[in-house]
Image 1 (cartoon, rainbow, N blue to C red):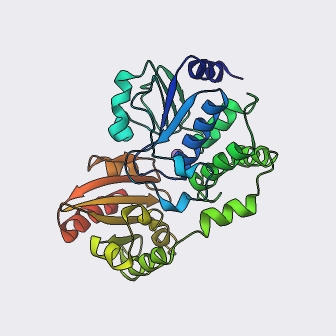
Image 2: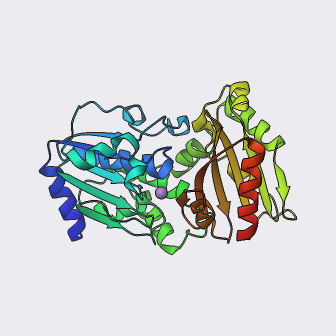
Length: 315
Ligand SMILES: [Mn+2]
């Protein structure tokens, strides 16, 4: 094991209660790495809870321990392990433990300022799950359940091994995870064929509203609160909808505007080449070069105009 892995295990052993915290609006990598770290802490004999601020996406209800996610059982924790969180503010309400926990561990694959006492940050890693696996592969604590959790994040953060971050290392990690006896076909089916009929209804509404700009290089999808209501969906159900816009031939940048209560839109951006983290940053957001997000206030037409203009400039 590396020094960082040993330091983290010692920090867990020296704690009395651990809070593993992923980012707001958690995705598969966030939930997978958080649940895996929670398991690891339990194996070390510690009380541990895994959380993200806000609603958890129902799409990951197949994961072991899913029912424990976002259900903190202690009023206080002396060890905070942040996973997949580039900045403190991504911890949401759990940010308060940065001040009260004795030790903060920060494991992430985004450009990350290193706000922990122990930081394992590798922006070249495909996913936080990949980092967690490489840290603890030789710890003696890996098992099939943890491997399932980590495979989920490895798969979702590489877009099911489709994005440009899918490299030799990713496949080697996937192969090593397979040695724990995980059923890859079943997990893939659980991840990618686990949509509710409501979610399909929402997808239909979102697809029917896609508009193309910049000679078909920009696709814009809009999800209004009324669409959620009509389809019986909630905000977490919008996760991944943008992939449909990205899948249109010729589209270089896709945008998904999701209306939030209070005249504000959460905008997701995806790109095949252009730097959309810079586009999101213009509106106070951030993320990766090829996948980012931001919040923009205004009505749907004003917000669309602003984000399309900014995206056009980035083409
Ligand atoms: Mn991630």
